[in-house]
Image (spheres, helix red, strand yellow):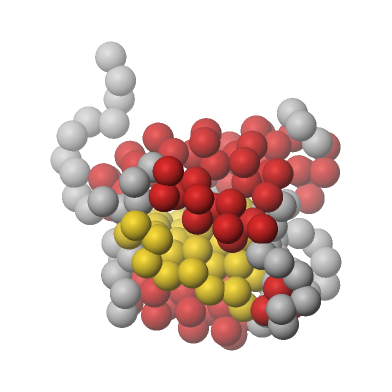
Length: 163
């Protein structure tokens, strides 16, 4: 069972001015895989709050996977990648490259997403866009990558190469 945290970054969502459809979409997609969504929070686009929450979910809650959504664009208050970069110990550039590759075939605006992915201790952290549509388009493609990454993070010694 994969223990998941979903962190939505939205100034309006954190004030109750906008329904968090992206976070709910992620929660449904994770639960459809049989994963246990342990934590779900909406925060404003405040770098220090994001850092504090990510660290707590990794260090205290010991989640296997944290998926953020929102705050990955070029709007002045979009700081999710910067906050995540301060928390992770190992960056995994292939995941966001793959996300942009998937999205770019749908919209050229995918080139503007700045999300990153990485590992802190035994937790995989992935930044996704804040659009429910984008999440539905991207997430199914990430499932085998997430499962494999978590196995490796937990120390699975088997070979990664396929015959």
